[in-house]
Image 1: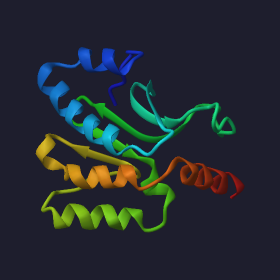
Image 2: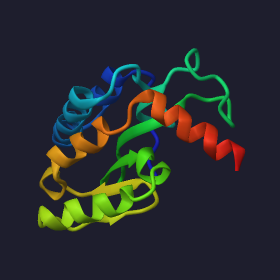
Image 3: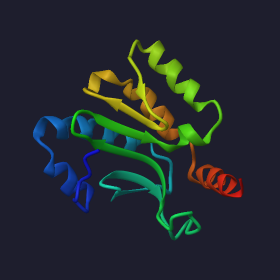
Image 4: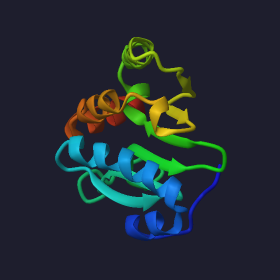
Amino acid sequence: MVSSKETTPAAYLKSLPAERRAVVAAVRAVIKKRLPEGYVETMNWGMLSYEVPLKVYPDTYNKKPLSYVALAAQKNNYAIYLMCVNGEPGQRHVVVDAFKAAGKKLDMGGSCIRFKKLEDIPLEFIGDVVASTPMVRLIEIAKAARKK
């Protein structure tokens, strides 16, 4: 995995070649438009990260902000990390079904959707997933996972 050393979203975008910047910017625009209230955009883990600020929820297992969505231009592809897909029962099936309905091939790990070009992902659906989990719900999921 390629990890950027940039410290701001603007610097990260500027560091990308124009073609890759355009793809990341398009997905980023959808994420920012549909992101529920309270999450913040930062650079974390070497990629664009949308997360719960530590001042809102400091009790994370690793003392880092609770991640909700992340976006990166990797060496051979792009990746969107949708943490809510792992935390909510049945969400993975929703993703699989949405890609199938859109006629798109899904390349997915645990919470990571990999794609080679913008046309490979159903952007409207990505926006729907991003909009699906209010910050308070993500915190509840994190707390429940810590109890297990």
